[in-house]
Length: 461
Image 1 (tube, rainbow, N blue to C red):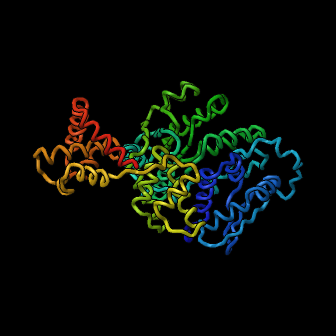
Image 2 (image 1 turned 90 degrees about the vertical axis):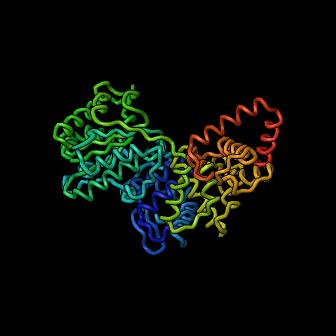
Image 3 (image 1 turned 135 degrees about the horizontal axis):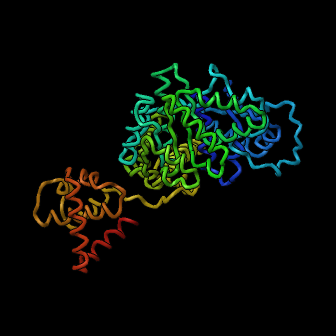
């Protein structure tokens, strides 16, 4: 529950839930057309720009959204949808002829609403994305260090900073964290976070309004520009041209530029060569998929933020079911919490499995723990559990210990050093040696191969 969360946090959680929990592909797109406005008592107000959007959400999604909001807020909530355009007379019969809920509305707006003056420039930063709650692991350690260095010394190191990775691995979190830290340390600086799609749409609107001078004044007179998903500028020659000049103007003026993409600069073959080469002027760093320990730490961090006690077996289940995408991991967490709230049931392994199975999340087969492996191997070879931690090197102890290490490597997602920790703090090279030895012995000894296969079958039951 998010009783103390601010309105933007609640709205973002709702969007995450809608995006990952529903099978209706249009649901998330339509809901993203709305913006959170206020919370008054038990009423959560959102605003939209067209009457047909209000009607569509009201008729199709309102009831479900109220359930989600009630779960997130910990009390019964009602949803109020307000149309900002009271003069909107668009023919509602043409709803289905319109593009389905674009992320950024390109409907006509006064230019003054699109391009704010310096004093009213909105930075678009999300306050909850800070360095303090970014979970560091082997997959993102270098990217985090680079982002922190830029945040502490904007325009003095790594300019531009280019972050790239697959979707949902933390690029956006790091970008907002940079912006928030700079904002904290340098409140006088003008900071702007924006997606490449928004950049494109603003430019189109300004061309239509004959207001390109205002557009250039906005983007070329800021201190820190954070532009997300630059790959979406592909096949937009005029936008690439404008961004090229914006990039040059900012860098020549010693302003900080941070860019994100789903691939490294050299692989952005749909962008002009002169842009790709400029993206490589500073530092490019990638973020890899998080390992099991990092995924578990992320889940524990989310639970702590929500003041929720998450059992270790539930954490392991979710971290094992979602192996690559942090956004999907957050979705799995939201589903488990919502499921238990809706059903008024405790957060247990059984309920978590039901929640993830119901929503078709990842692989929710039985999760095998290292303790289970050690227990079964110790029973099979008639040794004590403590022998796995001891320094004994006699064959009757060392050999079963090596088998257990091999099985941990084959049946769990733990890293080699972490497996070593479960065996008395042994070095990862010891684990490698054990795995290689047992693998070779199995090829030579059919009886050993049979025994290990039987253990695996038993563990998977």
